[in-house]
Amino acid sequence: MSRRAEILAEMGLAPVWVLRDKKKPPLEKTWIELKQAVPACTACGLHKSRTQTVFGVGDEQADWMLIGEAPGAEEDRVGEPFVGQAGRLLDNMLAAIGLGRSENVYIANVLKCRPPGNRNPEPGEVEKCSPHLRAQIGLIAPKLIVAMGRFAAQTLLDTDASIASLRGRVHACAGVPLIVTYHPAYLLRNLPDKAKAWEDLVFARKTMAGL
Ligand code: SF4
Image (tube, rainbow, N blue to C red; front, side, top):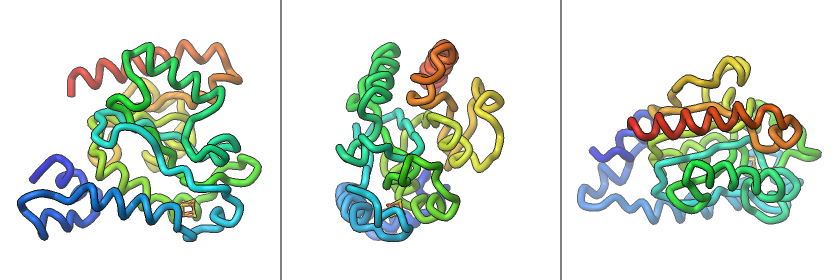
């Protein structure tokens, strides 16, 4: 069984292509289905106020998967996660450890639609949207997930623990090692914590080197 099939199985997602076609898993078809399903999704109330869904961006075979909270106003307008000032900071942080957003990195959010007024996502919205993210994780099968911000970390790890208590350790989400750091938008408001985010990225890079 391939690594992707193992991860899908661990996540409880039926790896139907493993059963159906032993020669070649039609991952492209599955991506196409997911890319059609998300923009058409009306599973929670956020579809009413979105400009568009924000699916995710990057290398679909990436070793690194970065997951944030939900689209903000700019992401909702552009249709891409982590744009604007926070996106530029993220790009700089990635460049500092030798990565780029489309080179061996995939970026997505827990929610695919913007909560109005940038309010926190509600539990029901997360529950409805999580199959989309779970499918993305299963298809990408990253070696390492970096959860950016309190909301993503708490959602992916199913915990109420603070970022401070979750940083600096390797956790696991759906069988994939996961490291926690701050959200770039938070760092823009709390510049002293940039040093901590840098520590997290160095830790992530070291962890990746050992995987
Ligand atoms: Fe569907 Fe997720 Fe958008 Fe809700 S947030 S409508 S579950 S894509």
